[in-house]
Image (cartoon, rainbow, N blue to C red):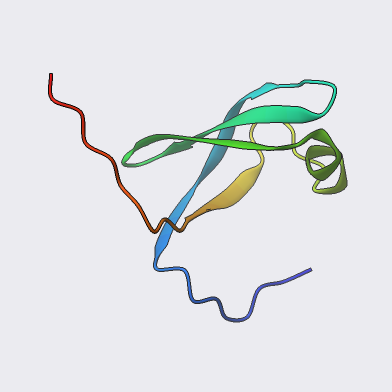
Length: 71
């Protein structure tokens, strides 16, 4: 599979740093030059994408809402 075009503007290229597998969903930490991006995806997708530590990936971020909390 190859992506030829996508409308997501926030794209972060990086490598898989950690995979925390669950029965249904898994947490994927991607190390990018700008920091760690974490994604929660189905474990089935982890297997289908053959993700392992060190896999080169692109994290695609699309959000319609950003919340702010005062510290």
